[in-house]
View (cartoon, rainbow, N blue to C red):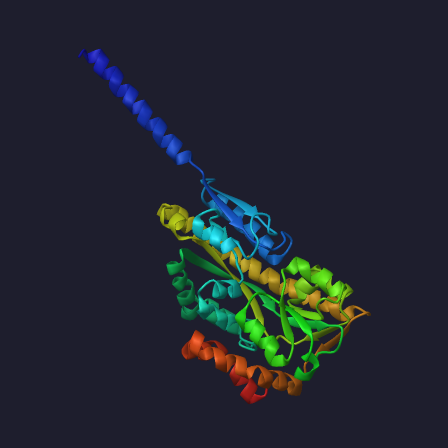
Length: 339
């Protein structure tokens, strides 16, 4: 073979290699991020913030397509879609993870489990929360973060001050074994409905009341079809951001790092936003003349706790006494001290 021909072939091979390298470097990894909240909620805004951060951090090697408000999948279908690889990222409620075969996550739904936001952070940011996320590996998921929605209030068309006030009511809940048991312990009938179904159900009196965060109550205009609100802070509502395990393991380490760093920042942003929006919504709710707003007294709180204590006792065997104790100890200490 002539020297000129060999040189030509060498240069051609080099050019093809460089072209391949450039194409490889420019390959975009697409993350379909599906969730069931509206874009203007704290969760929706946190998802958009994550998209912005990770696309910049990865120098556009990652593109995040966010699908809010059930655009791709309903809450009942999304985890299966993630396992099958139809989507790469979700932010399901912790109750949904418990329902999907990870019962340890039921601890987050226990009534009066957390004394305040600091108690939540102690668990979600500590070894217990990280250990729970690690258990998702066996379900084909990698847990990246906890996103807070806040503490819940109760609403109905009557005052809800004592456990006896719940007897005979149909109360909407998220899908959750714990929340079903909670309502039954109070003497109410739990009704599972998607969030967008609650308003019309309240309007035609198919249900009598609901629990949810102040921000959700206000944003979904439940105040137009409810006359009473009880500021009970009886339960915590949160989500976990999860990714498909196979997708995650196939990512190069630098892209995994970009996702983790961006997720931490988006989590801080979203959790602070949820806290601020709940506080603002609560102030608006208190000022509504058509609403009667009641804050539980210490005696009333004690009566609710006592009525709901059997829920915790019954679930200790399923969740694990050690986890239940670790999560509820701050709340129990406050109860004993009377604070």
